[in-house]
Length: 125
Image (cartoon, rainbow, N blue to C red; front, side, top):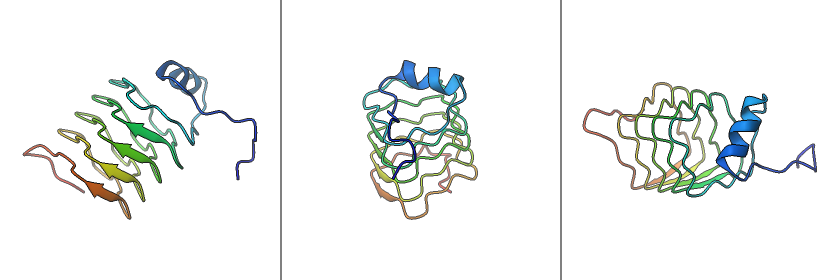
């Protein structure tokens, strides 16, 4: 149960980035399917729980310490994204691309996976 019953998750890239720039970091229940989030900086953002990122493109994004815990991440791209210390615990992950992403300290404990793509030199934590 949320403490603020008036909370509304961001509904677009622009709204998410504006709210982040204003200091907001908690974005539960966000639905940004098909969003172009290439190159965004969302370090320390918290999308848990229940956010949905189907076909979102996070290529080159800085997502250091970002939490995707208990989120749905399907057909998303994280190519060359910085996922240092990102949290994907208990996330539903399907067909994502982590090619050349920085995964140092990223956690995936309890996550379910289907069809992820890693590049030849990538190491899964």
